[in-house]
Amino acid sequence: MKRRPPRVTPPPEALSVVRNSNFTKLWSAQILSQIATHLLNFALIIRVFDLAEGTRVANMSVALLILSFGIPSIFFAAAAGVYVDHWNKKRVLVAANIIRAVLVLGYLIFEQNLAMVLLLSFVISATTQFFAPAESAAIPALVSPKQLLRANSLFVFTLYASFVVGYSLSAPVIAAFGDAGPYWLTATMFLFAGISCWFLPSIHVRESQGMPFKQIVKYTGREILNNWRVIRANHNLSFPITQLTITQASLGVILALAPALSVAVLGEPLRNSSHFLIIPAGIGMVLGVALIGRLVQSYTKTTLVAVGLIVAASALVLLGMSNTLYHQVEGRWLGRFAEVGVLVAGLVLILGFMNSLVSAASQTILQENTTDATRGKVFGALNMMINIAATLPVFFAGILADLTSVNLVVTVLGLMLLIFAILQYFWMRTHNKLA
Image 1 (tube, rainbow, N blue to C red):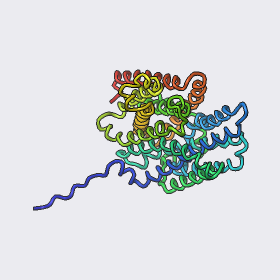
Image 2: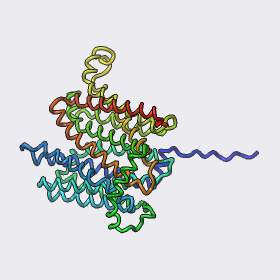
Image 3: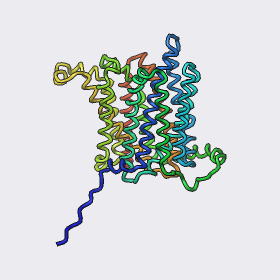
């Protein structure tokens, strides 16, 4: 009797995408560059505040620094996306990281000059506008369609986890190596990110290969306008871009208000309450990455995004009201088993889970509905919209929190987002857009 050949079980999605050597090179570059960016940003916030401390413009100086991070995306992101579509994306990734590594060393020379610090920050952020769309456009070229959702999940998780790691490392690095420590470390990380990208295969659009730079510049403005028309006319592009913009802007506001929220709700500075505000968010993101593959087997990605935004907005409202909610049930079942920190941790975990779910699903929808010739433009437009939507709200949220209260600002933000999410869900259901 013949034996049946052994059944070959395909590797799980998570393992198969990590075993893809080209993906791991790009992912490694993302991890290094994202951690370096956040570590540098926090170190600069500390440095700029120290430079202006004791003056009437200390807070304004920090605000200008934040704007120097965000403004370049408003002016350059869409144009950068157009250029990326005509260039070899591998070369863009390598060049962007090497240029940033060199520019960061400029802080060693000009760290006492506030104007030069702001200028360097602006130029580094402008360079990043080329890296971001090239990175997003490279993912579908390096993984199979079956691996795309998992690849995006890992990238979304890295995006958020790197914020926690980068901001957590900054203060210890300064304490151990002095003010220059973060500059040397981030320059080294950008350098190794560039080296990692150097070993990627060429990623370019054949028909645009060799197009003269002058010709690209000539048609950039027209391509940007055409790109916006295409995005507005195509729901499969406008929907995920809107969701990614909203979630990233909301996250930016929450991160900006996290120190004040920690004191207002938990009565502790943020450095003492990370087990309630930071770690649960990271756990939620990990769970979102781990479960999205199973969830898309039962629900469409569009449904997950629409419903996920409603749940996230509801959790945001409850987070703003967490102090009031806790005191109302104190002495009952919640008061007997927990403290307000446990309630906050649970809500933050839900926010982290839903944010990673919405972001990964939205980015996958976007990539599935773009071509190799248009991904750079679309993701450049996305990067610009995210920063337009995030920069000013972050700036004004801090002012409003000072004038009123951080709890009120978070609650109102959550309510506005919840109303939008509910209206969007019923509109999509009525027009059969959830399929």
